[in-house]
Length: 73
Image (tube, rainbow, N blue to C red; front, top):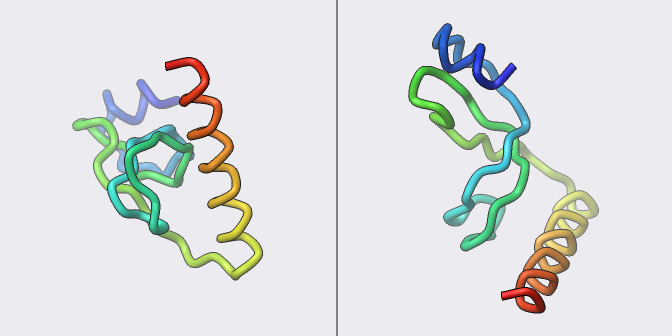
């Protein structure tokens, strides 16, 4: 599906792993986030509105990934 979106320049929104640079207050790691995919690949990371509980769960997930990465790098 991702390759098809790139080839057809469809600008579809897909949950793909992207490097975050401030979205959702996170940076320096990759998470699967809704992203517009077109001929240039990941063209725009979408920052959808999250309620407080959803945002907290996202931050907790990011911290778990950071913790795991620190143990293997």
